[in-house]
Image (cartoon, rainbow, N blue to C red; front, side):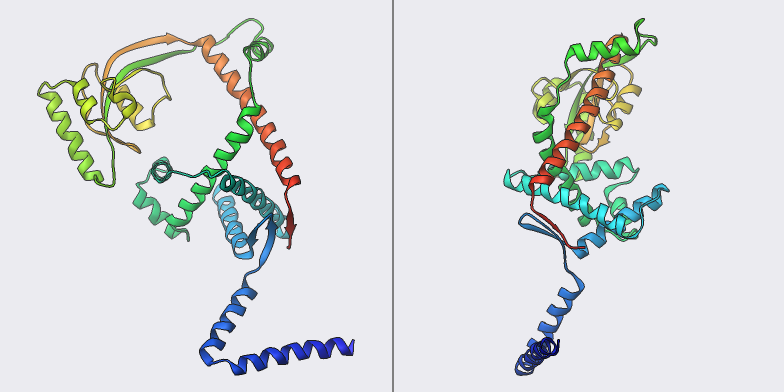
Length: 333
């Protein structure tokens, strides 16, 4: 015991001697480095990556904040820390797979997703950033979190999507079990045949310029210029522009909410005011409307979606257990 104490003391004295020999500025830098290492430490090694204590603490704060907002309850103490860390380990494994596969998230798509999140909360992107700051977060942090989630989704779709298949026979069998006598409720929907011209925001065109451009195109349409010709020339929706802006028959839920709401309120053959969505500004014209009985089709699709979600969830859980068991993971809590 005495020899171990002396050896330990010798190491301390040796370190002190080194510090004395260093200039004061280097001593301060070394002390700050040691202090940082003492404040932060590795809590998990995941293959060739690590999860730091500071990252775990940040995630714990997010989880607790979300639980408070939703009125939910959480495990306490060590159990919560272990559950959150395990979730972070699984995320890190999937992000490593994304890096190995050279997957990436397009900045335009990422910005669109952030704008969509803000709009789903009834806020502009600026108001959303202010709200995050008030909650102790930044738009940059959320942007990085969304980017990670989008990468993980890509990995899951690649790895799990192909493992799930739903046949027509599966659907018919479940339908027969649920409603042996056939459909009990009629489903009738209203469809719109519409066309649009989209003016999006670009690095060289801000929102006010896009809105002004859309208003100018609407004025030209009112003066008699061809909708199809202007769509081909001006629309940023390349998929429909070549077809004169035609979108075909649209069912409820096939377009973003702002577009669908404006389309449903439009009289036939009238061009809308510029309609703002996460994609930019739309000029919409409804050419026809019809009602469709989709009772059986709707039931089949609902059953197919329910079966897919259940099987995909089971496949995802099995795949996660698989990659977790194959990885090198060292938990250091």
